[in-house]
Every structure is written in C-alpha cells, then in structure tokens.
View 1 (cartoon, rainbow, N blue to C red):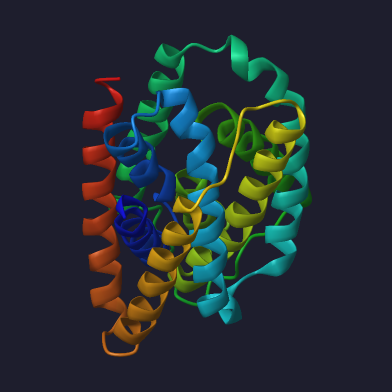
View 2: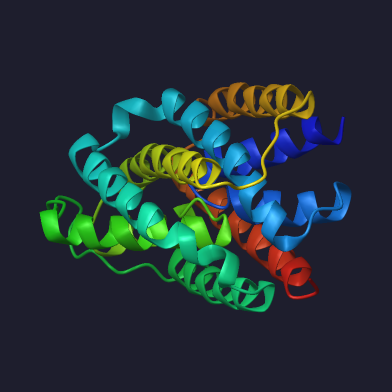
Length: 246
C-alpha cells in the first residue's frame, strides 16, 4: 500500500510543478522499500513516466509539441550514449549531481529570468533543444531524475514560455524521455521487475491527477504559481535531506 501513497505524492508534485517526481520517488523508495540509491534511481523512472504522462494528458492543450519532440529525440540519444557508464558512477557522485541540479532548480523557481513584456514571443531553437535533450538524457540515466527539475527553469528562462506552457511541455518531454531511458537501461541489462506495487502506484497517480484537475478549475493562476513554488521547494529540501544521508 505504500506504493499508493507514493503515487499520490508523486502525481501531485508532477501535476503542480511539471517537475520533482523523481525527487519525491527516490527518497520514498529508499526509505520505505529498502532500495539503494542506484536502485531507486532506476525505479523512480517508472513513477516519473506514469506521473508526467498522465498529468500531461490533463494539460495537453498548453504543450509546445515541436520543442518537446526535439528534446525527446535528443534525450534518447543522450540516454543511449551514457547508459553504459552508469555502472561505473558511484552513489557518492550520483548524490552530488542530484544535489547540484536540485539547488539550481530551487533557485530558478523562486528567481526566474524576468521577461520584460507579457507578449514577448517564445524562443525556440533546433540546436538549443538538441543540447537540452542530450543533457536531459544523460541526467535521467545517471540519476533517475526525469529532468523536469531542470526542464522547467530552462523552458521559463531560455525559451520564455509562459508558466502553463512550460509545465505542460516539461511533462510531455520528461515523460517520453524517461520512458526511453528506462527502456534503454532494461535493454542493456539493468535488473528491473514490475510487481503488484506498480498498479498501486498507478492508482495513486490517477487519484492525484483527478484531484489536481478539479483544484486548478477553482484557483487563480497566481495562487497556483505560488502553490507550485512552495510544493517544489518542500520536495527539493526533503529530498536533499534524504539523498545526502545515503
């Protein structure tokens, strides 16, 4: 049943922020399922795939598909190229990478790049999306982070997407890139099995998606943004406290 609670928490965080699913999943899997940091980083991808894609379906009208697909394709290449090196990376360095990325994302959520006018056009670039995708694939493979923790600040700051577009595009790109990374790691021999806990996890995420959809219809965008900032900050700080004690 712990998987049901994990699913609700992960689905809520992903739906509110477009990021942070793995930052919730990794410490929960380590604490309550007895997994090592490396094991949790692999199994967290399942939670990220489910949470991001289900939440994306509820927000799909805001997604920027061209940018999202470019990032997904490049991230698959990044995952394929870096997967053979994961076994050589110690838990210490995984924890360091997780910590640095999380702190950067925390800063970016509270102090985003200022956009001078509300009607400033978004900035989309083939090469920028390719580089972001390659980095996303490597990050996802090495740490189990879906990449939303880094994607959201990038979409807001470098692409100048508005908040709803950034969240939906992040969910789309993170879900597919995490799926590709999971498949590549399993294909290359990672020890991975799905049991009954998978269905509890799915049920929890579905419940979170339904509740968040109802909540978003009742609150203003300004309030939702503030809730996203607070939830995201809490997730990052709690995850860091657990990860740095691995």
